[in-house]
Length: 343
Image (cartoon, rainbow, N blue to C red; front, side, top):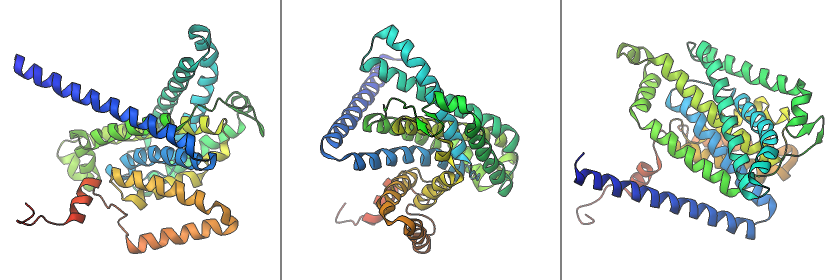
């Protein structure tokens, strides 16, 4: 490599590092502002919106980009939640003994627990994906639905695991509530950026080819089954991170938190935003979190009004708010074509 190209590469990496530091500083500042000005209820909605963004962007990789149909992602979220909670409670005393009590040990425990939750959820996605992703359409949906219910029932009957992860029967033992604005949105930023790079890479284009015509993709020597398993595993690991964040936000977890309705909420997020659009998945995740919480005071009418709102959106915008496009292309479309005078 010549000295000129090495210098250009160094400058590029320095710019990226400076931008990353700026993003972290902005997230930290927004978190401090939210905690000092907003009530606890509003803070909870904001945290749920961030967790939903992670869930929606992860599910969009398999349902939107790859064109498969999974409706059991709450199971992967549950695996990540229980794994993060279990190992977090085991790691914390050891790290306190190593580093001493303080914010450093807490942050390290929390993030290691999230990574472990992601690994376990990704492994579960791999185990489920290898035998099932040879299936297509409704058959795949039924298998993923069955997996989600199996996971929930297993955790519901694992009393010892429940006691270790924040709930013993119906009494919360309590996990440390590490989840805050900074960690939720830092993880959301990292995962959205990583999944965007994957989606727009050569691998992502191959996944899109599978969605458009799997037979033609196989004819072009694309390893369809291997790539579908890869997408499913990455999507499951992303749900595992969201599960770990949710567990530590709740200071405990219950199997009832991961019912079939949770998987349906995830599907609604990406359909409302637009299948195949990362920007749409982000907006859809925020939409579902805010809408469900704002309507909570309406008691028995809440889900009826929520369903009516979804019906209206599907009638007015059946392809979703963004369709398959991303935010930059939508903004360019809204501005309209540039005229010679403006150029």
